[in-house]
Length: 157
Length: 32
Figure 1: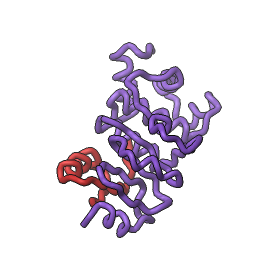
Figure 2: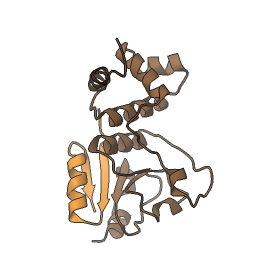
Figure 3: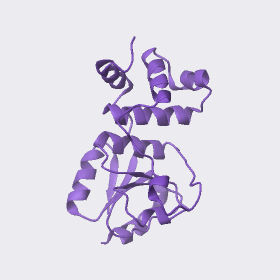
Figure 4: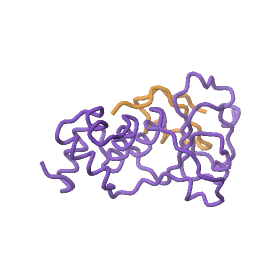
């Protein structure tokens, strides 16, 4: 069965997120977010889909991105770009200032809702930042993220 | 960290399928 046929045959109502690594065009039912790996050139042509792109992601980064999409992360294309870099969520190793701020609060023992209130962000935004943090740090839990951040000297408690 | 419970993996090579299946080993996976 081809990838395209398989995707079309799937019951999209039962799928949280598609994770796609394919050199050929793939048809994915609407309404379900898609995580494209390795920047297939044709993927960005679909402006109707909630999708994210990740190149050379580690397993932790791929999981974090898929989780963020399945959790409801949405981002909109600002315009139909020919430059795929504009449509890319790039996971860099360095944490952003916001991520460090959130990590500090996680280390202080705050929950996601508490962090959201403190920073005046939505819970989904906090969740997304946290997923990104864990991906960058290769962590599978909040505790592991804090431990790794401490080990790297990113935060002080 | 909790994984998406239902992941549909699409890959055009057996290797790609296997690698992604390992990445989402704890999730319920459908494979193309």
